[in-house]
Length: 156
Image 1: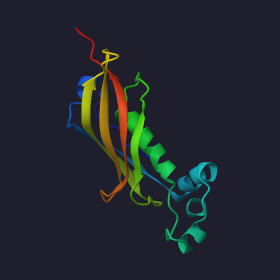
Image 2 (image 1 turned 30 degrees about the vertical axis):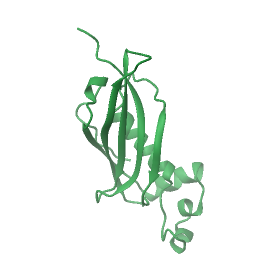
Image 3 (image 1 turned 180 degrees about the vertical axis):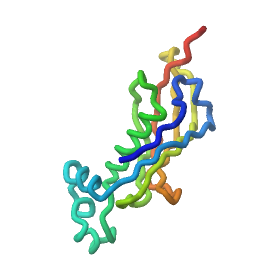
């Protein structure tokens, strides 16, 4: 896997105003990577057998959606989450829109949809985003709505 890092990673709640868009990443998937992941974690024929997959409804080998999700998490961790981040409460509306195939190159676009200071823990904010994983043609292959906690910027 190859990947390009963004120049500046956001660190605090204040770095996530509603409407902000972050675009980053470039990860290319090989057939071998798809097979290795699927054999261990999602051994369905469309993910592990190129010959059978070519004859099936996917008309060829495709990456497991969980593989795509794992790549998205890696990109998210490398570009959005601070190195000393807080655990998040979850992800809503995970969707796989179209298959990821060998040779596809994936990137992410993250749009802040809501940001507020936590009522119960006023040292942090709650940031909701809409995240899209895009292929090299700019088509959305996966989307999700993560909920994140970020520390407020320390007072000076």
